[in-house]
Amino acid sequence: MGGHTAEEIRGEIRRYWIIGLALFLLTVITVAVSYLDVSAGMAVFVALLIACIKGGLVAAVFMHLISERQAIYALLILTVVFFAVLMIVPIGTRASPIPMG
Image (tube, rainbow, N blue to C red; front, side, top):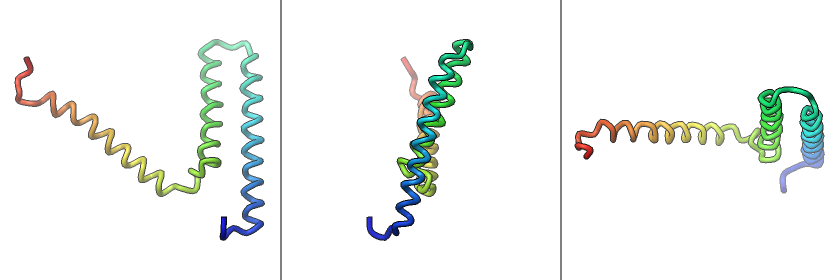
């Protein structure tokens, strides 16, 4: 942990407490929404929305993804390239001149 000042560490601890409080409040909101009389589709939508927000907070702060933008963009581009290859390969085999059965 060398290189961090006491003030930087206090700032990080404060941020973790704020995110922890936000996660707690979002959990309370999730429970409160479960008692509302809404349709099943709306209940699932709201629950998934809150879960996505909570997951985003955890990933961004506790997994330090918010400070790793360059690595994230590189992995995103790599994922898109692999996805494109996986979509193109079946098209190439479908257009193959080899007779199929």
